[in-house]
Image (cartoon, rainbow, N blue to C red; front, side):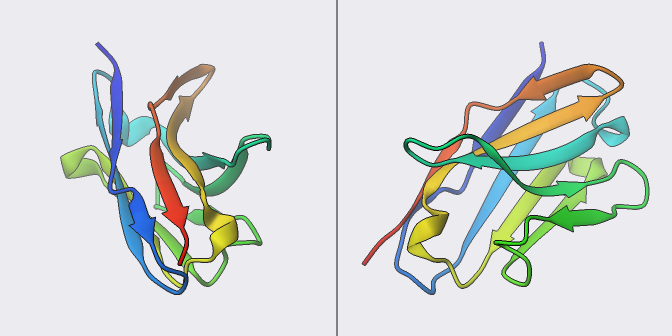
Length: 116
């Protein structure tokens, strides 16, 4: 059974940090391109960050460049999203997404709220 389980969300003040984790199971994790998406209330889901299956190359949305860092640990079948200097506009449900050659899987999401 394929599973992507996110954790690490919560309430944080502006300027604070959070680290999200996504643990994968049930598929060949190391061969999948991994992504973090987010969806704020009333908005479309948007790509935040991605990491390649080979070489660990990363890409980021312009809105989070320099603040967020994505990484993967294939031995643990886990991806991370380190989020620093958080802003209220980062408030959203964050989703983990795995994709490879037409196969794709979504996690259930974890809520991140940035508010004073």
